[in-house]
Image 1: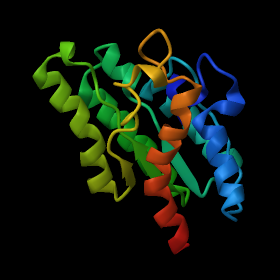
Image 2 (image 1 turned 120 degrees about the horizontal axis):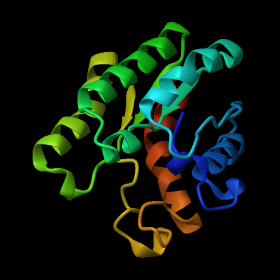
Image 3 (image 1 turned 135 degrees about the vertical axis):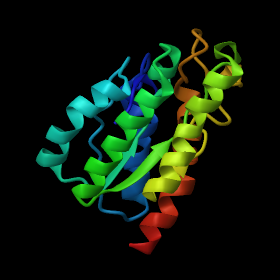
Image 4 (image 1 turned 90 degrees about the vertical axis):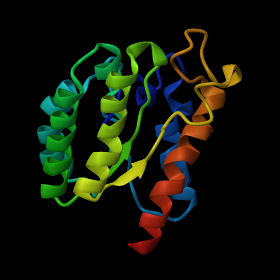
Amino acid sequence: MGDSLSAGFGMNQEKSWVSLLETRLQQSGYNYRILNSSITGDTTQGGLARLPRLLDRYKPKIVIIELGGNDGLRGIQPQVTRENMATMIHQSQQQGARVLLAGIKLPPNYGTQFIQQFESIYTDLASKHDTLLVPFFMDGVVFEPEFMQADGIHPNEAGQPILLDNVWVVLEPYLLDQ
């Protein structure tokens, strides 16, 4: 479940970190199939609306939630984002899925208080609901122009392997324990 960062906005879908994850899983001998239900522009409200149907239909073992960035950029109150994400985590866990949260950070122009409230969502929910956590999904990408598209918001194809590595370092230890 994600937004444009996971939907492969502005690039060939086969080059997105999600497609690269499926390839890495197969090459590493893990028998998982990826369903990328990411939508450019999606918010936690949209993800929450779509998730129950996806859980019922596909019965995933792992749910990666990379949402919230658009909530923050649109100024949606962090408490609303927190509640939506908590509900998505709960629904996923009720279906027996392990959840991985991909944390997002906001630009400094949103103000210290808003940013602190927003960014604490990921660590708080991961701790409270015992999820896997990538503290900053865009780490190593967002401040490196060679890994970003011209809009300065979306990673380009060269940044996708780094995004994959950010997820993989958290996901693989869990997979090894299964």
